[in-house]
Amino acid sequence: MRSTGIVRRMDELGRVVIPKELRRTLKIREGEELEVLTSDENELILRKYSAVEELADFKADYVRSIYTTTGLTAMITDTDRVLAVSGKNPPAKPGDSLGMSSDELLSMRKCFAVREKELKTLFRQPREIASGVCAPIVNGGSVLGAVMLFGVPSAEPLAFKTAETAADFISKRI
Image (cartoon, rainbow, N blue to C red; front, side, top):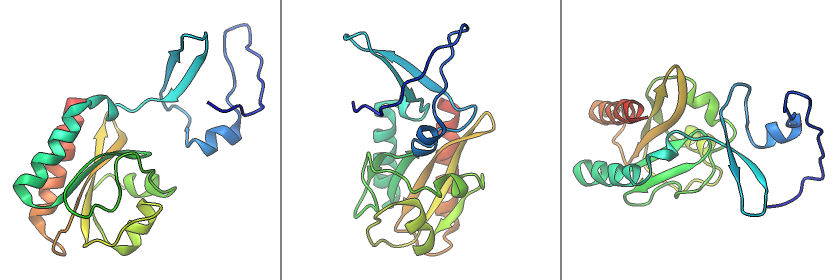
């Protein structure tokens, strides 16, 4: 961990304000869930909660199954980073951050084609790939992440349906 140099006082109700600069840097929005952790050294740790990340090994098996059956490179993300990838020449690897405009793209709440423009918006340093599709994972009215398929012939309806089905299935597992 690194120090921010920011000190805040807890109020009588036990509340602490997270400075706006940190919320912006960490992409923490109003109403977003934070997970509270403690360490052995009596440290209190707050981190963004990702319901999609909680799917543990399931997400890795799921993208592997999609790749095996369709031949398309498959990826599952939460709203901040890539969580699982399977396939040839993926545009990003697990742990890679999504770009700042990922919220805008995912907030469309419908499946969309991913071409060069969207690829550069979604990933900070994308590798060259064929076109793809992206289906947001929506649960309880909130966009929690996305299922993306790459290596898709342009406007392939089956790829859109596959991505939408996978995103819907994952949203029901959360």
